[in-house]
Image (cartoon, rainbow, N blue to C red; front, side, top):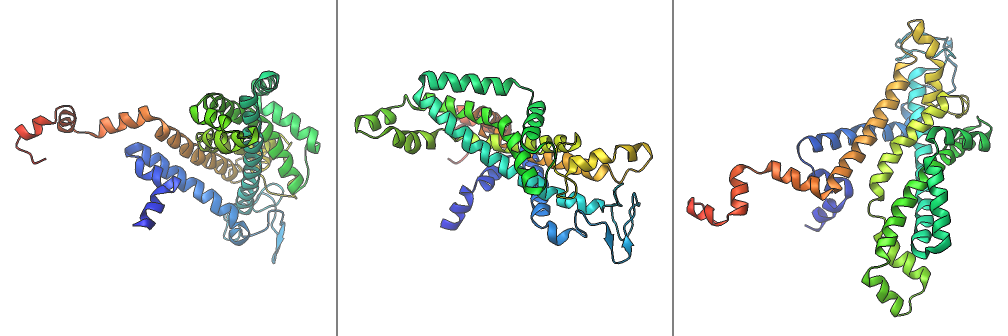
Length: 330
């Protein structure tokens, strides 16, 4: 009994059991696509047939733009890399960037939003103006500027991951800042906060012990939506040539850029796999985020429950006595 209760409290299981109909289908599809992406990223060294920068095998060089075959299931790129291996290793690069970008943006955004919302005054006004200015700036252009300023446009694996993550973090911080600040402004006027002040609790204790834990409930929804946006931004940076060097890591946007000329020549296998990987990964994470967002909305939950009821159930809910008149057992 206790074990089943613990399973029910798990976020994914709880939301999955709460969903119905099309909503459950969207959530399951998103979980499956995202699960495949995460597994490919984690198991890349085991399931990838070749290294991301490997150009030759036991039989010699792979050759450029080779069609799909038994040795290369998705063919080779114009640079002579195995397409399937680049796609699998690209999932690992994308996962690294998403994790670093989300962790940095959540930590910095929550901290700034908490300080701004609770302290108020000139600190609040200054941070709000800066956040609004960043939020109003074009997302991709801001990411490009930050990537160039940090790494000069291209760099190795971890410097490139940190540069891409930092450029995405700058874009995401205002979103977490605004959400947390709005919640903190509302919560700091609650009675339990005033009670903590009366008994002599310090400002840091009130902020981090009482206010913070009650102002971050909506952040998981934002995290899932931002994860998909982070992958899109990373792919855009790589496509424009501001990503990670191809010999340092595999990156879907870079491979997609190098396949533009191949498409015009009828060579489809260098463009479709990385492009499909971007689309399916973004779609999977977006489906999870949208499903969680709908399930967190009480109006939509009530609407789904109303649709799930039969006309007899609706009448019984409004007129309980009518069931006895119909001869049904209570």
